[in-house]
Each structure stands twice: as C-alpha cells, then as structure tokens.
Image (cartoon, rainbow, N blue to C red; front, side, top):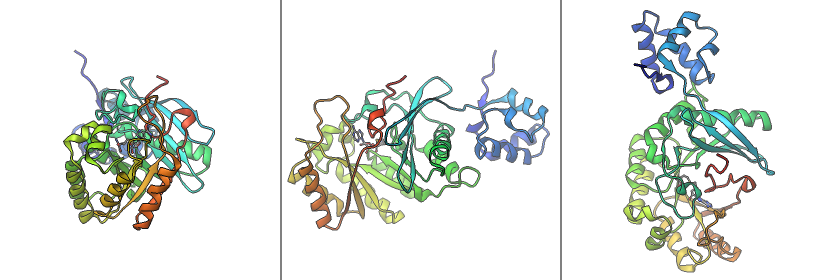
Length: 347
Ligand code: SAH
C-alpha cells in the first residue's frame, strides 16, 4: 500500500523540529528547513542547498511540498495582473495584483469557489470545492510579491482577502497564512496592511475580536435594509443586520479598529434616499468608513450600475454625517480581474 506523504508545509515549526529529533538529527535542522519552506519559498527539497543529501532524501521519503503553480498571468492595460493559480490537486483559484502610484496590493483567494450565494458575484456561481491550505494562500502572496518586484520595482505593500471565497468560512487557515505573512520567518509584513473582507458572519467576527487579531476588517454590506440585503445576498437571512451590527460593535470595543463597509450601488435596488438613510444610520453604530465599489457586470440583467446622481447622493449624505466615503473605481476589468469577476473563465 502506498503511504500518502504529508504536505510538509501543513506542519508547525515545532513539529518539524520534533521530526528531526525523532529521526536522530538536531532540532536546529527543523529551523533550517522551515526557513527554506517559508522565507525562501523552496519548491523542492533539492533547493535546500545547506541541508545534506541524506537529509533531503529522508525528507523526500516522508513529505511532499504542495506548492502552487501560476498557470497563466494576464496583464491589464491599467497594470493590474491576474494570476490563475493551479493547486496540487488540479483545482484553480485566482489572485490579482493591483498597482497604484503609492502601493501594490495583492487580492488573494481563500477558498476554491464559494459557498455563499451573493447574486451579483461571479464566484458564487462556482460551487465551493474546498478550503485553501495556509501554504496555498501564502504562495499566492509570494507570487504577487515577485511580480510586484519585477514589474514595479517594489515589494508588495498591502494584501486584501477579497478574491474567491469567504475568508471567515476558512478562518483557521486564513489566520495561519496571515501569521506566516506577518512573521519575520515569512514576509515580515505589518498586519495593519492586511484587510480581511467578509460578507458578514457575526459569530466569526466576534471570534476574531476575541482572538485579538491585528489586521483590518471590511464588511460587504451593500444594503442596510434587511429585506433588500436578504434578496441580493440570500445567505444573509441567517444573519440579521442587528446581529451583524452587534458583532461589529463587539469587534470595535475589543480591537479599536475601524470597520470598512463595501457597498455597490445598483439601479432599482439600493439607489433610493431610503437606502442612503439606512446606511447613514447603520454607520453610526461603529466607527467606520465606506467604500462605494463600482459594479462589475457579470452577465446578469438583474443588476445594473446605478446612476452617477445616486452615487453622488450617497457620498453627499455620508460626508454630511462625517462618515468618510470614497468611490472605488474598478481595476483590471478588461481581464475579468475586478471585484466579483473571479470565476476561472480561462480554466
Ligand atoms: N466573501 C468576501 C470576499 C470576496 S468578495 C466578501 O464578501 O467580502 C470581495 C468584494 O467584491 C465584496 O465586497 C463583494 O461584495 C464585491 N463584489 C462581488 N461581486 C461584485 C461585482 N460583480 N461587482 C463589484 N463588486 C463585487
């Protein structure tokens, strides 16, 4: 019988140290290998040049390195880059590099597909196949970091978990990936430069607050009126706005970190004064800012970008109430890399 080899990057540094001790070597060897795996991004045991041949063979006999491979890379006219990332089992996720004058942001996926059912999102049409492993999330970041260095002569500066999937439905692995990204043994990036975006799962928002996480939180709100939100994001019937609100109050109380609300304005759905007033009211509960995201059509007649006048009304009312609100223009639309467009069209 073939024994299935374990993914070496699924084990902790301590476990790796223990493995070497159990096999008659020094614990220190675990640190060396760990560094190869995470800081240096080794794809094979043979890359580990300061580790003896015998040790490499021993590692080979016990483990695999489930590295991802960037299958195709598309570059948009505006400098946005979209990677199709093939996983060891053949499944594909997408991640995006978004350059501006001052920063380079990686938008990464947390799941293959998504189990939520937001009607306006292309990823929702793929069923959820599986959660990504911490290493698979980390690799997406590493790939974008090297593209940023290559095309923009600077390292990656920010990360948003706004690719495929719902990060809070793969919480443990997302946290492990962020731990690596922020650790000196990984990329040493500040957690303040990382934003996790959720469609709003109150229980998990409270858990994050309890865990004392240091990254930023964004919530895809899209409507502060219960029945409207339930229609466009059907799963939200299980998570009423009052519960969401309470979880965010708890989050702020514990972390003192402002919440960002993501909000798309659609004609005939949330472009009324009533919708604007509801958002203004919702924004009063917790210190926050609002990002009005441009709608990226996904071939569904039900959703149309609202008029400029409707968007202006949002900005005017929010600003009047001292709520910071910005309109976010889409990037990378020509290569289907914009918010809600990630759907593995190429694969
Ligand atoms: N599941 C997480 C992260 C993925 S979606 C979440 O819901 O936050 C990232 C952002 O893109 C969310 O704010 C989502 O609501 C938004 N989005 C989804 N489809 C979109 C579309 N077609 N146009 C514009 N934004 C979209």
